[in-house]
Image (cartoon, rainbow over all chains, first blue to last red; front, side, top):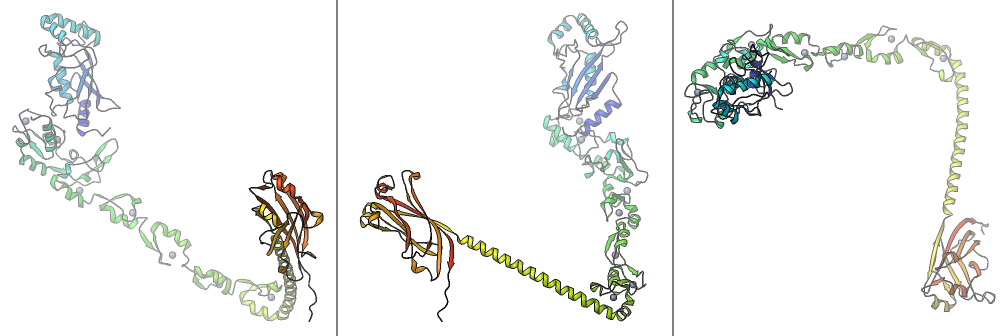
Length: 157
Length: 428
Ligand SMILES: [Zn+2]
Ligand SMILES: [Zn+2]
Ligand SMILES: [Zn+2]
Ligand SMILES: [Zn+2]
Ligand SMILES: [Zn+2]
Ligand SMILES: [Zn+2]
Ligand SMILES: [Zn+2]
């Protein structure tokens, strides 16, 4: 493996030193381009943890990988924890424009993870990746949110 | 602006480290590589990037990575203000810092405190008194601050020195050893106090020093006296007759011994000559096989007598001859075969004793061959050849496989055992 670009070193240092609230990203010891990410479900979202009537919950594991082309190409991010969300499919793939055509090399790992966190606060069923979930969301939002909460309790504990 | 192309080498201090006002770094950072901008280029909204970084990004998508305004190579512009800002950025001399493993770059208390503009930093660092160089005498000394180099040269263990005795060149740490070994050092003889250089002492001691003990020069003749060299003359004077007597008996003994040795040597040589002669004779005991192929036998036999060509063995000429129907009445019906020596060739008085055989070779079955062995001395009295009058029946020879394709094979092998000379008194 070729030596790590300065940019990745800098980003990693800052992620560890000044983590964003509710987000942690830890590089893998053997492959410094691979990160173990943990995002806490945002407050007032169906993915929130530590709510009084739940003992715990809302802790989502993700993996993030920087390709050789980074930062000219977006990082590859995927949820490892099962999540009921119209923009995240069964395999944990995320429908987020900055991870695809709206990527810019001025964006960073931190901004990507913050955007994913924001996506949990504001699901967008009009731009779905998981069609059945999106349908559920659009036809009966209350019920869909209930399912999302249920899943959070079941899987994101 | 070479300063920006730094590598990962530890001796290259990163620009972020040397900038005096660390707050400024964020403002001058490229949004793509997150480092101080190198060759700044900007979009129409003033977003700055390194030229290399933005060119690489534009290959993928033709927009500003920060504001996403439409952008391409032609639309990129320089910023003279930022360029000047970068050039005149206040930085520490790189020798203000030192590298510490697992910590990184830290301030070197003994280092340079100069603050210069970025564009002048390389020039300063080239002449900075706090920079490091290798000792010119040896890489072993490692790098030394230029400021301290003169002091180091005064005491460098590898500095050159010359031996004051032999003028050879050494490094300072070798000279002590050398002085113990240098043979050009001045010394005094321990017996006579004569001054000399060390290299001549052995000679002095062996041949010259009056106070060194020596043996009487007549010790070979048996004088066992020893004395200081300066007393040699008086010993010779006083022992003249004694020495003469010793010499006389010494040389008598010597001559006797030499004679003995000489006769032993002679005997030894004699033996060697005899041995050589013997081995030469053995060599001349050469035997030689001859195979005579008698073709057209049926025609030749009508003549009654067939003779071979001459062949040479042991320096003499021989030939074989046989009578196809005997050579006399009582050998009629038999083959009579003889080996002949051309007697004319034998010098008078010489005789040859030889062993030989004559063989009729059976070409159908080798084991049925007829072989006759002989031992005799040539010349033969009253004849030239020696052989067997009734060697084989002519009828057997002609029928039992001896002749094939009208050809008969006769073989002989002659071994000369002895050569003798009998010498008669000369007439005169
Ligand atoms: Zn850059
Ligand atoms: Zn811009
Ligand atoms: Zn300096
Ligand atoms: Zn030195
Ligand atoms: Zn010397
Ligand atoms: Zn002496
Ligand atoms: Zn003597």
